[in-house]
Length: 350
Image (cartoon, rainbow, N blue to C red; front, side, top):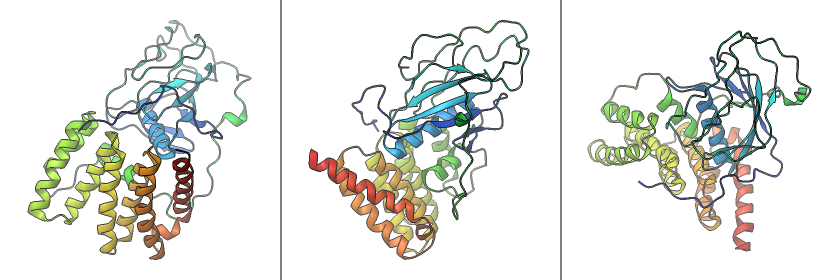
């Protein structure tokens, strides 16, 4: 399954009013990072910077445009301004600046050599800044930004840097709306794939474990082929609406999204959402509607976006009328309708 090509510059423009997302990586690098007030943790064998970049890339795809972030990296004592693009590449948007270390560490090496990124998922690049560097430049996908070696001497505790103002710190999280802490959509699928929990037993446990392993290793095309074959075989033996087959189809939709095929991911997720809706499973239906919405926002063609959006909003509206989680989060549906207005305007200009 080939990845759709996207004709775009390596560095794209972020949203006109988008403020940088504040990211804080603790000095130890353990225990996760804070991304806009949300805790992001690394999967087993994954570096924290990769987990952060993966999360920021998902945010960029969900918004439909690149996002900017300020990485406050306590491991090396620098703040790095980055832009994460829709194709997963990252680029510096300014000069890194020194921030207070936490705490001072007498060390011979303070992350002087960045760990090369793996191939778990599309985002590429690292955010470790060099103490001295040239003016901002675009980082090609997969190209590390190599810092100068740190001296093999104890490092004194730096004084607060004048450029690090209170406004650079992560904002206090707003009061959470009802059910907002529940993970749904592709985020829930990703947690199941990348988490360290054992796979549930069942007739599809073995092929699902093989698919998950392929995703974790970055073999997205292999995962897509295996998922497609397994769905076809399981549908024949268990039935296309068997609960385990439906979960497998949700996984296939997520893999299509990772492979850069948002229209296929949309179709798979929305079909499963419709099945759950007819079965009156409002929670499962809403989760798959959110997956379809994530894939839909990655569709760049306005005319295709309008056609898919009509299908999405029709089912989403029906779910909201039935009550349940869709009715408890009306802002998401309103946001989708707003995007339809923008797509209509773009299609008219074309």
